[in-house]
Length: 502
RNA sequence: GGGUCGUUAACUCAGUUGGUAGAGUAUCUGCCUUUUAAGCAGAGAGUCACUGGUUCGAGCCCAGUACGACCCA
Image (spheres, rainbow, N blue to C red):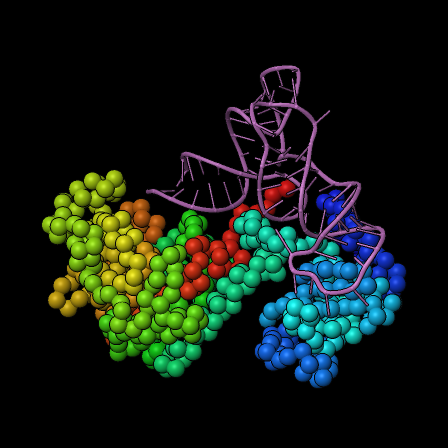
């Protein structure tokens, strides 16, 4: 049984001691990993019911609870021991005394290590200092732990270990647990919100023959039986809009996207995106919906629609959001006189003056976007909808009725980052085909992020897609915001890391 | 891709001018019946990330590599 551990010569003295202890237990016919303990109460329930109950009442009640959890601290006095038991909902102090358990059970109990998972039957009392504590009547080892937990006071600090061994991080870092519980709450609230609004959740392909819906480098893979190249999706957009053609008028998907790009505090190669589409709505309707959705999720998850982020208070309350056109933002926030970015040659000069390169034949919209990224985006701390993006960089967006060079599209920014991207959908198949053709030209010119031609998508539009608006929201970034996390890795359970060496 | 910083016991960290590797926690032994970062006494525990170089001598200086963090692109 222990050969698996023995075979690795990484055994340090602590692990050796535990293996020896485990062998002793086996010699005494103690099962190290039984699965017959039935718990009837969780620690959270004890706190909810008895946090304010006084000592006399507790002792008079003489309850009998069956708890199970991990031993996370240990204070022994010889014939009496205190420890903390932790389960998914919290931790509570447990008291075990030789005189209550009997010599035999107590000897067995004394072999417990920090990290072991145990079952306890007992009642509640209060110690001299008034702490709610479980008095042990019966004790059972449920799972032997062979490895020591990190320092009880400092916890696990090494971020690399925290990510590589997230299971340990979750045991010893309360904040980590809180973040991922909040993440689940965020996703749950988004679903509830959209379901209430009449949206239907769907699942569309993660493996696509033509990766579409975003400007990004895809991961490539191969299907053996069909002997075909496949891409991990960079967005679900084109499939969700096919569903609008099919008559599902309000759809959404919360799922993973994959982009073969750099890793940073803001980017993980796989990340979670909410995309939703609503027929007979336009991008302005989505601004209203977004304010409602974000403020509601923030309230449900953090208790307030004003949330702290890295020292700033971000106000997500409905009505507190700024709406500004792309050009106005370059002028008013970026501080650029209009003529410096409206005219192509001048815009090129402005970009170069900022130390940025300009590629051969690069479109005006792209150059403006570069200026925006440098001069405007970092300054958008409070929620801002920036709308009317250049058509050049919006190949799936509907053109503005008055000005075909801009689209009815917005991006949502806050804390200096993009949080969402939305637009009135382009449903004119002729225009769409032309835009794809333009993208193909850019691809051939060397832009490996440009869109592929998707004939079937154009064919779908030819059947007629109702006018609609759609939006993508980066869930990881939303969770970062609502948990005040500086790095995306803090909100992804198992972020991508290079393989461990040694 | 570039720059800066980091990697020492299971965990958190010291380590002086280059001269035999340190602490706290955890572990082990002993004492201890209301502690909670329990306490007291003692003990064990190290491929100083890896490879090479300089040197009589390297955790420390130099070069490279790996992994990570942060900043920039």
